[in-house]
Image 1 (cartoon, rainbow, N blue to C red):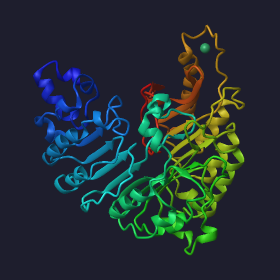
Image 2: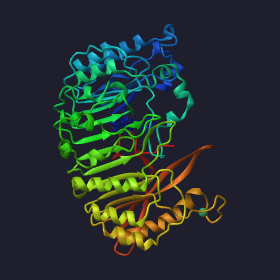
Image 3: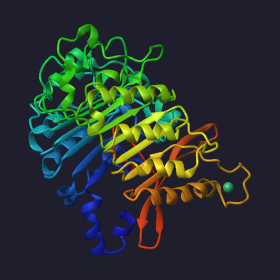
Image 4: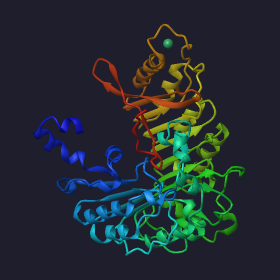
Length: 495
Ligand SMILES: [Zn+2]
């Protein structure tokens, strides 16, 4: 886009609003040639176009922790502080720095800008912030240093594959270290937000989340590791959030612990009926799912993902656990309201499972059942068996399934490359399914691909179905993935 914009002045003017809507500063490329001291802020003519501003400390700059004499960060923040009040349309401010965000900058942000979403990503919070009241901020995201959450065996954040990312001194110092003190103060100051994403690394225990009400909160996302310290009940937490509709418990298991159940049986005083107001529920198989599924009576979107922290590899549910989850959902009656479902399993998927799913959840529009650690093999069933089963899903629009295909041998000569081998049967099967399921708009199949010398990943091959009076055509879609904490919106995958 920037290359396009520089080709002629009209194009430059036309592309500028998009080009500067979402900006990163200090700029990595410039930071290599200039010293931080000499680095100017973005040109003033662009300020009115900025909507999202990412303040990212370049990886090649010192941490300050290691060599305070070399850092010019006060200067950098001075330039930022001067510019902030003159960025009239700023809505999102993200901060990734190796030290606590300067209090002055935050206060300028709250007092003189219209910022609605504050995001602290990969940034240590160790000091008490003493903030001016951040009334206008509607959304808060707190991701601790190097929190490398992984959902399933698919793609995950590329920079976290590199050892040098974790070897940076500030990440070594703060990775996995509890930041309860500062975290609790942030949570207290932002009690009025509508959206909260927070890692349990910032939370003393669940009880401290429910100590005061969250009157406006609509979306709660929890990341990090659950462990013995996180005592308290999620039910009590939800009780303090009367407007909550989207609950995502994206927690990983602590090494050496079994799945952590919600401890409501020991501590709860309230009834879990509060879960009946949740419309969108995302759970991890590292945390007990039963209490949620048995009470989510109005749920419209449900995902249960396998989640662990890198370098551990998440393990999906067994087929018996899948069956149990569906039974629990039937108890609440949420199976009737459910329109979208995403599940991850470790076991082979069968026609019988899909038949049961369709009968139990008759209103499904979106179905994605992923096999963690996809394996090739014999389909095991006739294509028409699948066609028949899915033709009973009356509202099905999008289907993604990790069923086995008998893929080619490594030295296949019938196809030009590995991707062509993957396409061959899947393409034919997509047409076949589309012919059985008239409502179907998109279809995807899983495969496994090598992404490094010792690394393999699960991927999806997705098609859009185009129907004409005579025949069904397919358009292959660009690969996508779910970037935590997103469990429903996919982003393009750039390898
Ligand atoms: Zn082949």
